[in-house]
Length: 245
Image 1 (spheres, rainbow, N blue to C red):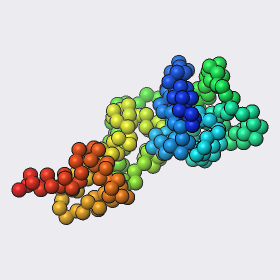
Image 2: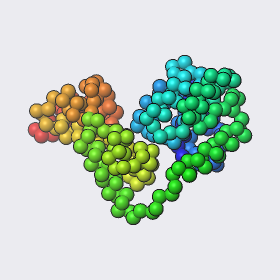
Image 3: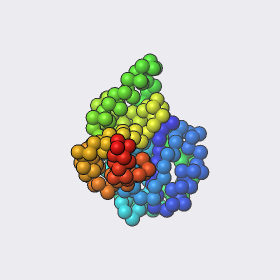
Image 4: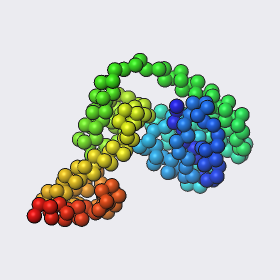
């Protein structure tokens, strides 16, 4: 399945397209829908996808701007749609190399035709990989975990993918399949594991712990720690000290 996100500032349209159209029947998994292009960009920083289906007219950032940012740095296909038959929109979209340009209201036939063709294109550009032995995946998981542990301050899926010579979307899929966890969930888990270790040492200030595990704000660290561990860093430290007495 190829991963797809949908972006439209009208919630009913975004959610409706994600939930009602039978994406799985043509080889796609609509993993998320967004009503903000900027939120979609933030998501794509850590969770790469294969295709972005986006409206053009949005208040925070147009679909064309979103497309330009994506095509500058990501290997992703973009399908744009609009309620306006605007020649300038179409010309700009073609110049940027979008996979297709559709007009609202989006019909079942138009979506099926576009995404069936797009799946064929994706299949041709990503031929099946020869089957690998289980220890390949075991070693890959260990290498990813080792990278995260040594880069808690600035770990990212994109950097990790470059290190292991895989695309971010493929690494994300393989890591989830063979470890049972998303890359970002594992990063958070290992950050909290390290934070607990450092907080057990009274010589470390909470501010230093936050920085060492990748947080630029003690408040952000405290919120994340409480959400994961169930108490604040200071409460955790007091409990550890009480246990040692």
